[in-house]
Image 1 (spheres, one colour):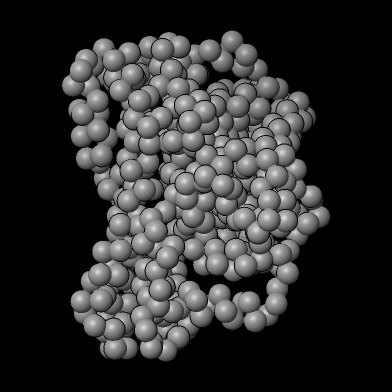
Image 2 (cartoon, rainbow, N blue to C red):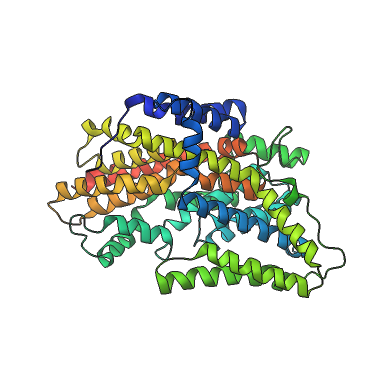
Length: 469
């Protein structure tokens, strides 16, 4: 039997310190590194604790997957730019003379279009729309918010994604949920109760369309972009290498937007969705690898020398390094939080408040805090779901009532909410990367909007709790 670790309040110090330092210094790498070093000493691991933590955290399939995916996408972005495809697409959109509002709405719609991967979505939307939004004087903070909000909040609502398979899989064998089919039915029933995700998607559309006016730090960023033409604040540090932001198209190449941009995107989506339907697992990374090889061959046929293609690929890898550095440290501090029992501590301090009326709201809060502190929604799901569903079933006599459905949705929505707010989250980092935004600026401007959506979701769960019993 696995031993339950709970180091108490000490367990949340590394995560809180990393977040506080990141906001105070605006240097995420140094903040995460310092928090990891201090955390290993607090955990009693001594002077060799930090290098050991790095080795064990990064030598995992999970980190390898997100690192390779990020690298492959960066290489594809470099290919898109070297062939002039991004520039051609941007020029096509600019020729339509879209307003600032229309540009933001287009970014919002693109995020929902590539719903199958919360990792690809913010990178794709940010990269595709960056030059267009820059010319429309949309701040990078605003673009990264739209890109981030079209990632996990959309993926967690669609039944044909890895999120659906993962969440439903965690429910199998609990209470009345016996088979995977039962679990998927529960996921579908829970979609209308996934209030944070639903509210966020709608809220972003209203903000993008100008129906809800910008406020707080985002308004300040937007005023700067509109009045001064500065899409980044003075002194900002975009989370992407200059190799990607300053890359020019190969001299003399003909801009073939369909061949070098639209077709590769269609191929990626076809492979990812097709493999999910056939194999019940979306092979997203394999899709990017296949398309990367396809584009390399295509570029050579179009007249780009092999040496230039390899240089472009290398520049793509270099451009991904800033994000990978932060991802590596974020994964390390997440691993440290698990070792110190951060999640167990958060759950233990909330046990005295549980009642059927408050259960959905409390579960939502616990999942939110846990995901914010650890920077991982999927890790939060894995810990919370086996606790939340049995509790819900205990209050319903083993029947899958509205309370059970709401608790399932509360775990899903809370994990996304906390992950959405956290500077340690991989999707938050990837949104900053794709939009070439300062990471902490993205987090600070996004946070008030996420908190409002989270507050509305919490109120909805309180209503459900008191009316479903």
